[in-house]
Length: 139
Length: 139
DNA sequence: TCATTAGGTAACCATTTGGTTGCCAACCAT
DNA sequence: ATGGTTGGCAACCAAATGGTTACCTAATGA
Image 1: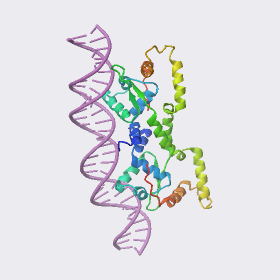
Image 2: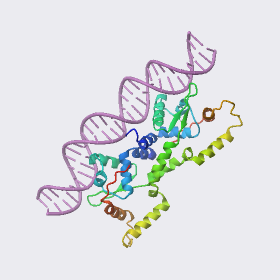
Image 3: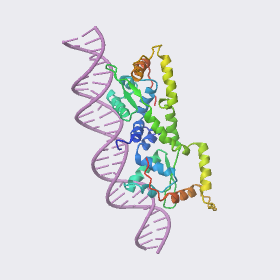
Image 4: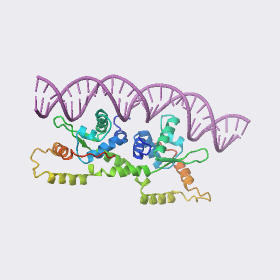
């Protein structure tokens, strides 16, 4: 993953239950490394690594309070994930789903569905045809 | 990651630019494996593996159209990610952020902000103090 | 001064991940 | 029948990940 691929780094950091647990913990208030490590069976070194991953993704920041390093949750990367997700909201939002199927219907250039009743297969064929010339490599 | 940890599997599947590109592609319509693989420099086998990861996370499903396996984007896991994110919306939502800082200010026992503008350092100190006795291990 | 505590770092290990090549099966079209 | 697509699978490999133990520094406090 390229250094500048913030989204990959963020999602990869979030794809671990321990790290999500740490985030949940920090959501209720800043905490020191030992306080964060306390609920987990693993060594403090392992937790330190998790914190480093979270810090590398910009999801937390560390202050310095004499010998303590209070960790603080940073929301910005979560906002970016949410923004990415919003592009796909229509794929699970019920009401928008109805709108989409309506748009698909009026877009299907009059070709009557024939008797084949291919509601899934038909959509797949049309979609495949429609899209063959594209060269997107979005992320 | 335990087999039932859907969220980890989904986030891990999304934490790869190629796989997010595939999702972006499928968002514009179903596509066959070769169509999906075409924009990428890697082998079709590699793309097949990516598709398997996405399928394992429930993010796509495959149909069968004679020798083709048209892939279809499934929104449900994205909805789950969105639901998880919603718990933390207040950490990046501007208006809620203003509310939170207001609440923090009136909670800071009358100490007037002084000219020091210690908005971060001060919050860390208070938060660290506030939170010492907690034992959450959410995820 | 010296022991303790908070935390980071290094070396190591096993497993997972992301890629490759090569082969195989199924289906379509001569 | 045979050959050309479409796609999956297995074996292999290098690099990343998630954990360990051991050791180190910095600050506290008796």
